[in-house]
Length: 167
Image (cartoon, rainbow, N blue to C red; front, side, top):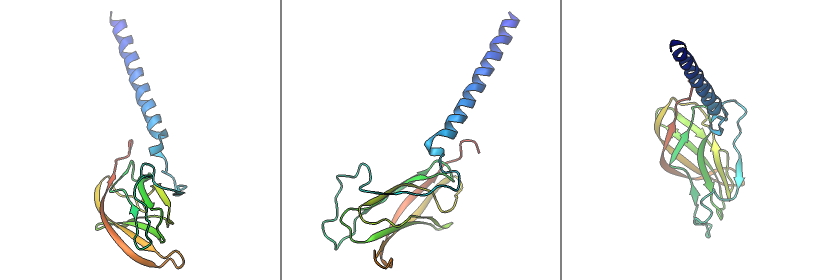
């Protein structure tokens, strides 16, 4: 009986270690784990943000329409998060977004988005510790010919930085 119990304990231990190893490999290989290196570059894409294709467009050049995510989550301090920024169809100006924290200063700066483009994922310009941060999203309206700032809109948003899986 004792030999059988020892074998069962050993088998159980091996199963647990295998499960933990597989979980670690899966966590390392998931898309959320991407971007830990310095090779990351954001990609501005043509068109509307997925899911917002039927939202209002700018039919009058006197106004400026945009979309930004109000609750941006990063799975790790050094990983890209879903920033979800859109320079809406019909606008006549470019835009750039910065996230500004009272404690850390500018923690994110987007590339310039032309009208009818969006950005799904990007990395912060500096790593923040795990936590939730109230920040101001500064939406800069830029002259497409000169790059000069024409207007700035400010939005209160929240950044959530998750703890690394193994860290």
